[in-house]
Amino acid sequence: MDFLRPLTWDEALALKAGRPDATPIQGGTDVMVEINLDKGRPAALLDLNPVTELTAWSQEGPVLRIGAGVTYARLIDELGSLLPGLAQASRTVGSPQIRNRGTVAGNLGAASPAGDSHPPLLATGAIVEAESVRGTRMIPITEFYAGVKRHTLEPDELIRAVRVPVATGPQYFSKIGTRNAMVIAVCSFAIALHPEERRVGTGIGSAAPTPRRAPVAEDFLASELDWEGHRPLDPETALRFGEMVAAAASPIDDVRGRADYRVHSLAVMARRTLGWAWNEYTGRRQA
Amino acid sequence: MRVNVSVNGEPMAADDVWEGESLLYVLRERLGLPGAKNACEQGECGSCTVYLDGTPVCACLVAAGQVEGRDVVTVEGLAPAGELDEVQRAFVEAGAVQCGFCTPGLIVQAHSLIESSPGVPDDAEIREALAGNLCRCTGYEKILDAVRLAAARKNGPAS
Image 1 (cartoon, rainbow over the protein chains, first blue to last red):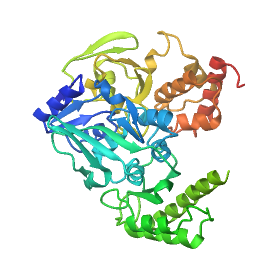
Image 2: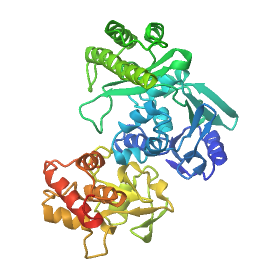
Image 3: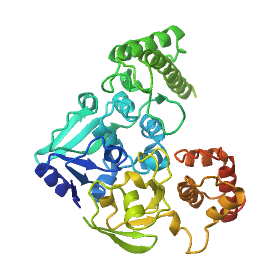
Image 4: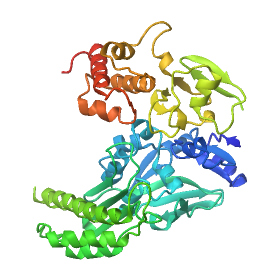
């Protein structure tokens, strides 16, 4: 195994171009588990810790550009109010020690269907900024996931940043697990209301080969919600929304949970997060 | 490869380090610092918690090469040789140690919580801070007592 240690982003891209088999490592919270438990041995590690360009975030108009080295702990502290859905999901990642090292970009690189950041990234329409010596590519989040632990990055590409629209409405995340910490999701769900566009965003985690949206449920809900008049949520609408979210999933039985339990709990989480989001939306507007 | 790292304030070098090796392995097996414990090797148990550039991390999840030129503090480095840090003393006095395996990681993590808290953290804050440190003996009550005791001594009573 080789250990590659670029000191700048340009150097990192050049190294990755020369060694497309190198595995990038940032916080190590996924990569090192694979190595420690001998589940896989990369040909080379490409350490991105010294690349300080990656540790910054910036606001570019309505979008936050989050460098690939921004940890969950910093995202929670510094961006919690601008990206409430992603921050809620980040708070459920591992433990403080894990959040001190782990990153959203690393979650994307691992591309586990159970990764906590995927549902809010899907619900908000994030974009993955991928770069190689050949140039930069903006990958819509819905086109990023390719299968279980597979993504659509080219072998010479690295994730430079994740671009997430600043929240313009309520966002909520919910996750099922055996306790409130240190849990890989049995399944998870994120909702984002985009009131100015009269649009609803969703994201389903750990209930299909890849994280995915529930487009039918989104369109149904967007047309049912009383965006102007702020009528209270019709319980029947909430129930149907939950059923449509559950119908969008295609889970399997595995060590963390059964498929039918995942379908059931997704419907419940979708209904509950919608209730929280609608209460916030109507409460805020009435105040 | 060779890894140069400052450990507990002292510049150290480890030789013949395998590229896929963890910081934890370097500390325990190459630098003779067995304080940080090796258990789950997947960031679940917290017993290998050390400071990396002042931030508590699981040493088992840091690749050895990633600490080149950086600053690591282990449980051995919290107090001068032969002395105990306030958190260590509180763990002894409160009876927060049974088998002791999880203790070094808990002490580093609790140390970090107390250093970053203005006063005595409340129970919710303590539980959240220690959520990634597993103890299978104590039932945690005595550990919470120890953290409150150390925080009160270091930071004064809760306001």
